[in-house]
Length: 467
Image (tube, rainbow, N blue to C red; front, side, top):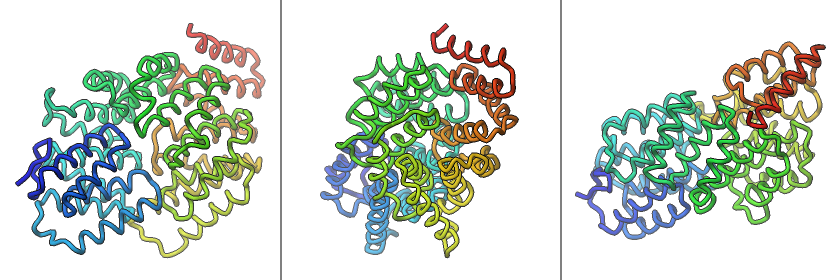
């Protein structure tokens, strides 16, 4: 019997295949692009490697690319049909079951199966890494925290990948609002491995959520060599950098970063990167900033991603891109196609069905209404769901695009009572956000309170000056 690098038993396999598989897991934990090549090497040596086939399916799902998901589903189905799985170890069969659920679109069941698996096998790094990302896709903050937190007792300071586990745990702590604890755990992860881009990402989130934008910029600048290239998160972490700049009042440099990193002619065209590009331009659009022709190229890139209803969170960003490019008809067609899909014979076990019905479609329709300058309509669509937008995934920072759209729609619709409530809520959570203080100034000035507006603007200026 073989074992992987963390001591988990494997059905007998060629040592070279196990070594390549272990290397692939290491690269997955580091978000390195070589993960696919290493896994292919493992399966070339040992085509029947069960853990390799499960990992192949996981990788097909994690990128949220429709073509990759379809290919992963076909490959896994063929493997299971041709394999006597009764001869596999129980842990391997559990992985194949979880992978099967995920390629069918049942993220909830897949996540639960992986959660049960690590209770019995707390050192299964693949199950932890994939389950953590599933929790992110479903925005299950408690699971993001506790899936990893529950196994840390089985890992020691001598474990090579303890840092990666701490990085995952730090992100879960942040999404649960435990910012101080998250920062401490994330920084400890980076002490163990400075190249842990997910830990760096978790710490970046803590600064974002607390309005510590100057510290965030300094933090990312100081570690530039560790995150700016060679990993799948570099674009996303640049997006966080842009958010800090926007809070600091800089709208020029974010567009320079957009052109150099977020989306350009040489971009890979990955959905997970394109949604960051759309989210940044949408924030600028809400503030009346002109992004020029950038929307056009981005909208064109989204055309290849929306043929099938895979993930509503992606659909929202495609709608943003179409609206930014003045392709209103295409945005409406996408919304209509998702409406027809939901009205048909859908499988209720597919997680995206609930995501689209409960949040995805209302948000997309609200974006269209906003673009049509039907601000009251946008408010009516967004206000009822503003406390449950997490149902369609993403992080607090990412979903803030929805909350900002609601706030801006309320202001433009003259719904100042609601706008005042929304601003007060934001400042109650993060009193160090210049954006929120400037929105307070806008609202109270519209209510006739010039003194209050001046005080709010002054507070924003003080925060941006770092005083």
